[in-house]
Length: 149
Image 1: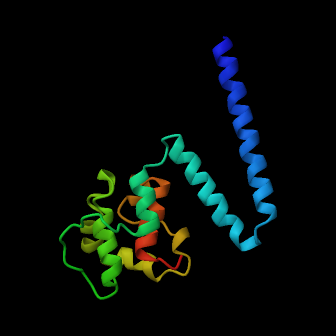
Image 2 (image 1 turned 90 degrees about the vertical axis):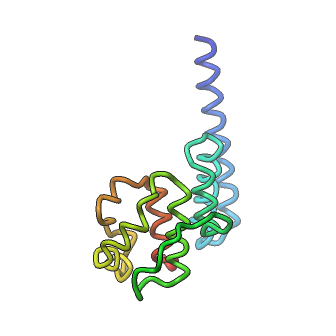
Image 3 (image 1 turned 180 degrees about the vertical axis):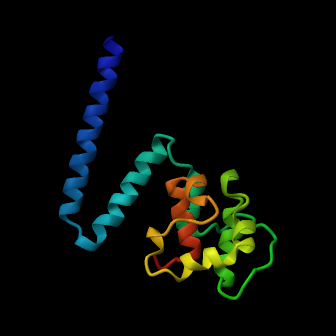
C-alpha cells in the first residue's frame, strides 16, 4: 500500500515537473518551434519508458544511415533512388516492416496515390499497412515516401 502511494506520488511529481518544464521552455520559443520541442520532449519520455524503439527513433532522425538495406531494384520512376534506399533500409529496422519494400514494388499504383497526395499524412496506407504498422512506423513510412511532409 505504501509502495503504491509512493509510486503514484512520484508519477504526479514527475508529470507536474515535465509540464512546468514544457511551459517555461515554450515561453522562450517561437511558435513555429513549439511543435518540434513537443515532439522531442515526448520522444525522450517514450524512449525512457521503453515505449519507443531506439532503432525506429534513430531511423526517423537519420533516414537509416548505417543500417543495411535489402537488395531490391527500384520498381519505378516515381520513387527517387534516395527514397527507395530508405524504404529498403526501413525493412531492416523492425521485423514488422520486413515486407514493406516488396509490397510497395508489388502494388505501385496504390502507394503512388500516397506519394501524389496533397495530404499524405491523412491518407490510409494500402495493403493493410494502416493496421500492421504502429503510429510511429507509419510516420517513418511517410518520411520515406514524402520527406517534405
